[in-house]
Amino acid sequence: MSHDDVRMRGFRQRSDAWEARRRLLESVRPLEAETVSLWQAVGRVLAADVRADRDVPYFDRAAMDGYALRGEETFGASVYNPLTFLLVGESLPGKPFPRALQSGEAVRIMTGAPLPEGANAVVRAELATEANGVVSILEPVPPGKCVSRRGEDIRAGSVVLRAGRRLRPQDVAVLAALGYDSVPVIRIPQVAVVVTGDELLPVGSRPDNYRIVDSNSVMLDALIRRDGGRPIHGDIVPDQREIVRERLLQACSGADVVLVSGGSSVGQEDHAPRVVAELGELAVHGVAMRPSSPTGFGWVQGRPVVLLPGNPVSCLAAYDFFAGPLIRRLAGRSTAWPYRRLHLPLAEKIASELGRLDYVRVRINQGRVEPIATSGASILTTTTQADGFVLVPADCEGYPAGASVCVYLYDEEHPLLSE
Ligand code: AMP
Ligand code: MG
Image 1 (cartoon, rainbow, N blue to C red):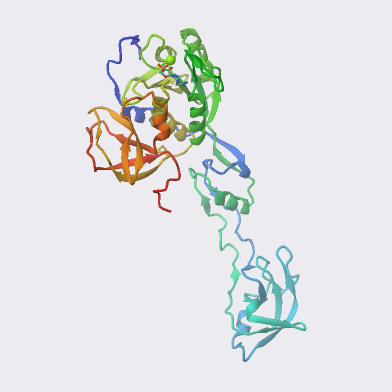
Image 2: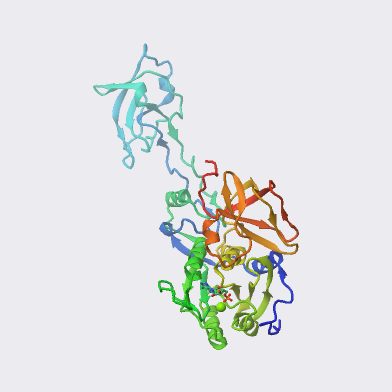
């Protein structure tokens, strides 16, 4: 697409936010697989089905501490009529009883130890007494009692975990039990962050009269990691077209996605959109969304490039709406919001313009939702004071006081989330 210079003229038309998002997300697929050790695999997305190549457990084993014997030989046992067995040895985990058990014999056995050949049940220690090499059984146990059968947990040949699954701690435990030491998972998306702005000082600087500290790098870093990406940072880029171009090209060559912060609007120093249009394709520039209307995206050298507004509140909203799901998709994860939700009534109305998606920061006060300054996109602390946000869709003029709205919570834990 050719891109006219819209600088200082404003957006002629803005794309529908959801439609733009769909276009962006459709342009990517999960990345290829890499093999990682089980120690690093939790939270990663499995790239292929995992099948068991053996039974788990691999042998019949005791499920309780007690005595292994033939269950049918205990029939008729009771406290008043104990049945006796000759204690011929023991079976410990990893140290089986060395021979087959004969009729009338019992073997002391511990949980997890192999059941001796010839035995088919375990009598719990509490239901037996042991003296002078003889075990007395006080209760009958049917064959199979207190025995974990070979293959009871996992059958050889079965699929234990499916491709696409985000691995949990217990999943790597199962993989370890099967004898794996590594698994194929989707590669971590490398996300280059290109921060632009002549006025910006690096994190850790003291702001002075005219210069401000780059807030977006640290925020984006955390968001990218949350979404399963690996951030790659560089030096702050001055608002000079040639340098923006050079740094964008450099970023594209070493990353799966490029996020540009700042310089995405229609001001005279906003070079990123034209540079993307020149180097590749600028698909969207200007989105019907508040905050974040100066968001854009396109592709350079086949890599998606998302242009995020420099304003930190807009940057957060645009990241969450466009970049976050893009990175999650590349990482093989769900594009759904990574926030928990609560449905609560509004304390006061939220007004919104038709045709525009609003990302409204809200506070929850006594179970009711209070919007925080629906304007003032540059006030970063609106996002720290907020418990979360409400989305007002483009085809909606807002909600009256008392209406139930869906709040996306910034925190994973919130007192109103029930246990
Ligand atoms: P821009 O998107 O470059 O037009 O910037 C919009 C506003 O956000 C301006 O007030 C910038 O100074 C501010 N801004 C841009 N980038 C950052 C950043 N990385 N951290 C904090 N504020 C920024
Ligand atoms: Mg700027």
